[in-house]
Length: 399
View 1 (cartoon, rainbow, N blue to C red):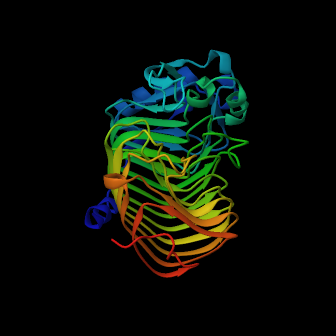
View 2 (spheres, rainbow, N blue to C red; view 1 turned 90 degrees about the vertical axis):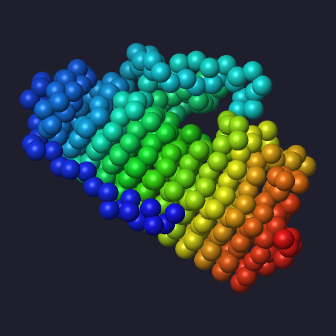
């Protein structure tokens, strides 16, 4: 697994032969004029001519959703700002969202609001870089979450959306104030996210559902980045494999999360999280699911983690469980947590697993020292521990 990941680190994208500016195509960059058409024309034409698309520093380009084609390079030195006109924000022609509870037996799907920066489906070799900002003006959307029903919970636009994309590079960019998920990249392969600064609120009550890197796919690297948001820092959905996340600082939201959700028999395997700092997050080292969802999470490593002021548990597997007597259908095996220090405000850890074949197997806890008011609470968890403070003797059963 790691051999492939280190190969991924060496992946590069060839630089474009030349650069063209969106202002050559009529964009004003005055944060008042609607520059959508000029930007889209520039992106399409410059990419066809094998030129990078420059958004010059010192300008703010107001825009509605944009579609990014294969082989595009966006050199964002200034700021791209989402249109403030929520009533006129278009629906996606392809994406659907559900307006019913997560475990509904009869889910209802409707068109989702279009993502702000949308990569063409089945795209390849797209690069987004430049040191500038993409601003979704999410603060205009976040209060809608409090309206009745689930539409505004699930259907707000994401800041950067990708579906079935190959060889994606996002480097040296700030992603600010996303209406919902900041990066929503599903079905991506051979992707690299580095030096990404996500600045999207400070907790669920203020900026709900603003996941940082919400990803699903294979051969993915995330590194040297910060996430300040109101939900999961790096949630990974099935099917996913061969992912390395390192040198990330998570603030105010949640943690590093393999998540079995809205799926039947999806698998997440071969994932490494390391050198991660959690500051004032709700959770840290986490596995999520709901009782009715099926799937497998295996071969996951969290190591070299630092926790500061984590509100709930430092290590929580099956965080969505609201009743410890409900057995989970998800299977968990070969999960290792190693070299973790810090503080949690509620409890050290909670590992709640299903029964029989759905129990948690091969859990390894090593070199952990977390200070919290409560220790461990566990159910159907099997594995080993060493040098764990407080002791996990009442948590893990012998294999």
